[in-house]
Image (cartoon, rainbow, N blue to C red):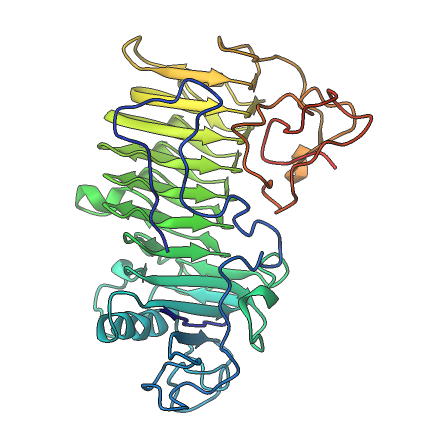
Length: 436
């Protein structure tokens, strides 16, 4: 049973057995989510839900549910809604605040059984999170709080009947941690995750994790504390923290797909910080222009954890000390089909020979030992303006491992062999973008 909550502006991560590192590039952890991940601007439509053409509560369904089997529950959010008494059951009665829709969805999942999943659809716009909870007297703690079996999607115009009609690239839906445009007041965490939750199609910005307790110094953009949330098609930018400016992962094994981490900053892990028995999976992600003392792109401090990175692009991340792209102080890493270029002062730093770090089918500036790794200018189209697609003649074309690559790239384009480009018989490119 599926419930939708729509806002204008599900996930079992199925991670690998703990402690098992996939050195063989042909073996990769299965995220349990469709490999294409809906990476294009328009929704892929896989597992797509619609409002079934019926009014919530009609046809004998409980209030807030619809569909032939009363298995569709949608909550809508549109900050431009003028309806005086919103219930979130339609675009015309949409909530103006995202958290109200999420709480309504949570109530539905708790009321109507464990098989029910509730979606929240959010219309395009900029949603300021600081001050959004009128019942909270300490607004720095305001956050977009996710719950199990609640899936939150951005990128709608506010008229869609079906999730496949959204376009999250065109209809930018921004979760902004500030109080308003000119305010210096910011929330500690823009988004706070949960197990079995989804957030998809948002720009997450303006978080500042500088709190008085340790957990409030992690994850300025997104905090996943014992929360294996599925995060897809998101841009996480201009967030700060002591650790994990863009994303903080603690005791969690989330799947992060088709996301960009850019211009985030922290003491450790400008883009991402990983700690305490975590096993996150990153597919088709870009880490660019993040900054930190160590691990500007990604920082792993996890004695018993492993990070899996497939088809990522790291570019122009800057660390004051070491590990500009990836810094591994403790823990294990399996990295395949990825590009590390122009990160200052170095790319991948492994702090201890006790860490198991497997890097294969990667283009690493300065070199890194591993099967099929290369060192060559990747020939991005326009990296200064964040275009990391590949030019004709790039050495990264057809040099990835086909058995490890997701079926589609960060834009949702299917990975296919291009005649007269790259290596005949090979399909997958290195990096987040497939040449086409």
